Length: 209
Image (cartoon, rainbow, N blue to C red; front, top):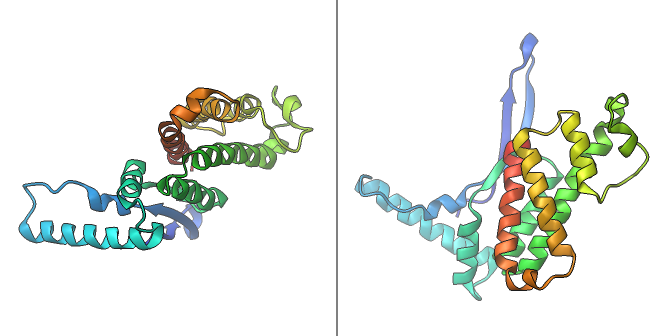
């Protein structure tokens, strides 16, 4: 099975200088795409072989106990989105792995905590550049932010977040509140909630990074 992929992309800015940008993604789940009748027989055979190799690799990575459930979880997560290399890649991979291992609440709370960490990272790293903004007075003193709306509103005013990332962060905020504060629905729907949160954070990555 092919491992999670990472690499380097050469970007050519002005003045003919070269900058190396690292990136991260994992598309192994594509091995489970359905085979099309229109494909040539050789292509179908190669796809089946790749699927078998991917299954063998996943059994090594995640273990054979409850493997059918783990495989469904892996497929439902889809591809790990393309992203520049940063701390969120490693932590997001850990949350996704928890979900595959059927550890749904750790996956849910983990990815929500990661969303909060990313917001804090952006605010703390950028706020000194926006001292004249209306929202600066709400963010200049604190060393961390657990009120997501404050951070998201500031980043939105500074035009740091894309429109899509802003929307998905606010969706993840609601999921975070439901997951952290006690309610019986989380226990009943923990797999669905975890999957939704993981996919929502993935959309943040796709839109922002």
